[in-house]
Length: 210
Image 1: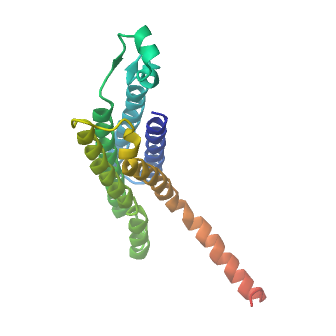
Image 2 (image 1 turned 120 degrees about the horizontal axis):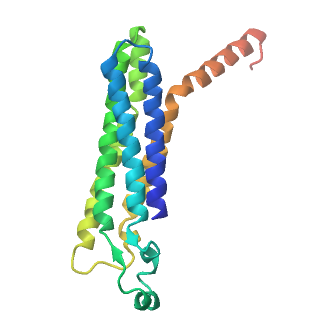
C-alpha cells in the first residue's frame, strides 16, 4: 500500500511540474486553446492523484484491516470489515496514468510549433520532450503486468505471496517513477551543459588542459 501511494504521489507531482512548465511557456504565446488544454490537464492530473490516493488508503474499512485481515485473532474481533477489489483499482490507476503520460508527451509538440525559434532548436526541444515516450512505454508494460497479476489472482489457486508474482510490476513501477523525474528535469539540463561548455572554453583559452 505504501509503495502504491508513494508511486501515485510521485508521478502526480512530476506530471504537474511538467505541465506547469508548459503553462509557463504557453503564457508567452497568444494561444488560448493551448493554455486551456494545459490547465485542463493540470486539473485532471491533480484530481486523479488526490482521489485515487484516498481510494488506496481506504482500500479496507477500518483502514488497519488492510494489514490485519490475514490475522486470525484480529478477524475474530472484527468480523464485519470490508475491502474493495484492490487489483481492479490498480489496473484503473495504471491505465489512467499511462494515458496521462501520453497527453503530457503530446502537448509540448503543439507548444514547440508555436515558438519562434530556429528549426534546430525546435528539433532539440522535440527530442527532449520525446523522452517522455519512454515513460509511456514503461507504463504500457505496467498495464501488461497488472493484467497478468489480476487474472492470476482471479484464478483458482493463487499463491499467498502475491508480491512475488507481481515482481515485474514493482520493478516497472520504480523505473517509470524515476524515468519520469529524469524527463521532467531534462529541459533544465541546457543551463548545465552551457556552463560545462563555457568552462571548457575558458580552460582552453588559458591553457588549463593537457
